[in-house]
Length: 281
Ligand code: AMP
Image (cartoon, rainbow, N blue to C red):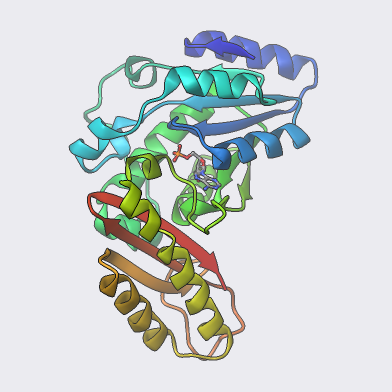
């Protein structure tokens, strides 16, 4: 694996691979790597000759400065971890490399209704930040494929919209959520849970599984949502939302059309750590 920090060098490298007819896969991350990230790398390597992993904690997608400052940084360990994977390039740009003209007055994307529901409602501007960084990274990496996790369900839909808006030829591949054996979705933020919180955290997945079962046996969305919220609140979580949504639009589902794919999405605080997860129905 080679480590590249300068965008122009990565552009040259990718250009050479393209000239050799090699497919490039891209796995953007914010580091503090775990098995969820590594699964994306593995999937990319099964489809592409080159796999570029980026580690960049993007300041423009954080709506809480404290969360940005405390975001786990384990770069030495991440490099060692990636050395033993199929990643061929690690891209480590600085904030100045990605935003050479500074962080103010950045472009705005018309993402439609998907921007303001769920995560967008509680983290205003978050998805503009995601698009700002993704568009810059994709411009540098120009990958054939982009591998992202279903763990960030709404983010996948937003990036898919970005690719459409920018006329990108990159193909987005959505990969399943990787979980710890007790069901907790892997996340870099899990590192910040206290041992006691870590023991309680899998309740989110248990609640999702229960809600999915209820919906599949014909339960009403509103009742299922109420029960899920109660379960979390009783156990000391502070949910931002539990929503059952149309899996394609993230708008409220029509209860008469129960055969359409739906998704249950949750965001909840445990102490000061905000956890998100989702399950397709
Ligand atoms: P992050 O470093 O949190 O920005 O995540 C980088 C990529 O890894 C995103 O596409 C995430 O959706 C994906 N990812 C994060 N956690 C998981 C997980 N538990 N399973 C699968 N993909 C994940």
